[in-house]
Amino acid sequence: MKREDYLSWDEYFMGIALLAAKRSKDPGTQVGACIVSPDNKILTMGYNGMPTGCHDDNMPWEREGDPLETKYLYVCHAEFNAILNNGGRSLKGATLYATLFPCNECAKAIIQSGIQKVIYMEDKYADTDAVIASKRMFDMVGITYEAYEVKHKKIVIEL
Ligand SMILES: O=c1ccn([C@H]2C[C@H](O)[C@@H](COP(=O)(O)O)O2)c(=O)[nH]1
Ligand SMILES: [Zn+2]
Image (tube, rainbow, N blue to C red):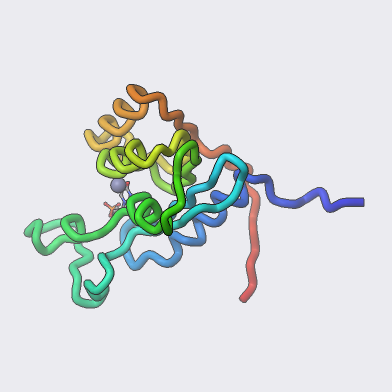
């Protein structure tokens, strides 16, 4: 008889996005993204981090203060990294699993890449212009977005 407590596709892909987020050096919010083809093949992944060659130790991670000394002008967003990491594979019709609702800049890249669906975990910046603009664009172009249904499943991985 087969196992019954195996991961659903959504659990598997969101689990991978959560694992990718663990690579982030951001002390504030660690974001992960996993992009999946319509036939459930993982196409690409990403997390928020500094551009390649900009060493994490030499970059600011502050949230406030002189804008040039905050992370915001430098950090590459998880979804943006995932899209850029696609290795030449088409993302048309794909689904993006994201641990945070994508901002407007990521939304633009999502639209241009042909991704059709977004499944997100957290929407803690829902009241910001960035996320409002994001949803406005998704609605306009017919990209669907839905909150990941948390089932409080614990996935334990021992290394
Ligand atoms: O679409 C998004 C929006 C934000 N991020 C990243 C950018 C930053 O590294 C953090 C946000 O940090 P806070 O301290 O919570 O402001 O999230 C992203 O990857 N994707
Ligand atoms: Zn973004």
